[in-house]
Length: 181
Image 1 (cartoon, rainbow, N blue to C red):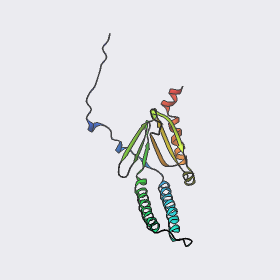
Image 2 (image 1 turned 90 degrees about the horizontal axis):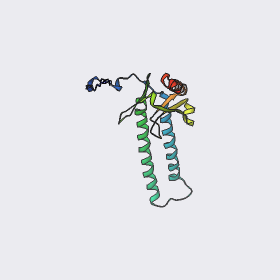
Image 3 (image 1 turned 135 degrees about the vertical axis):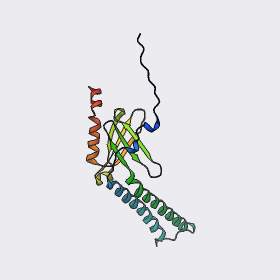
Image 4 (image 1 turned 30 degrees about the horizontal axis):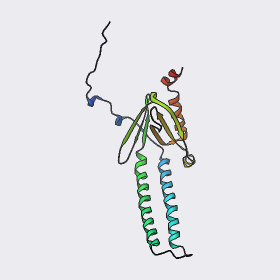
């Protein structure tokens, strides 16, 4: 019996490749505009309803109700402003990269996430387009891998045509095509 040559050399951490140096591209600026518009519309509509109830002339509100409505309105303005500000600063930080062997997603304002999904480990890839995404011409590319019921990564704010091209690239990946044959 011939002895196999076993190797288990130490690799210094400094010699490992860094995902932060991967060239990436931003998602569509329309995604940020859509999020800002939706946040403004939803919180503005709810605020308008609360304001109408507060100043309506048809019946008098019992004593604690106007104060409670004012507190709700103030809380609504605070939460709406927080969400608006978050999207304003966080959405431009979402970036992605599609390479020969993997997909990489960079996101996060307070907590930075870098998600790298090898193409050979992809079980399923899907394009999701809600009604507002369709109006803006955008799509979300969702990638699923083995072992989980939820997606591994979702790249939001892609132009619909780009999302379809990326999906087709993954489906036509040479190693995946050879496995099926």
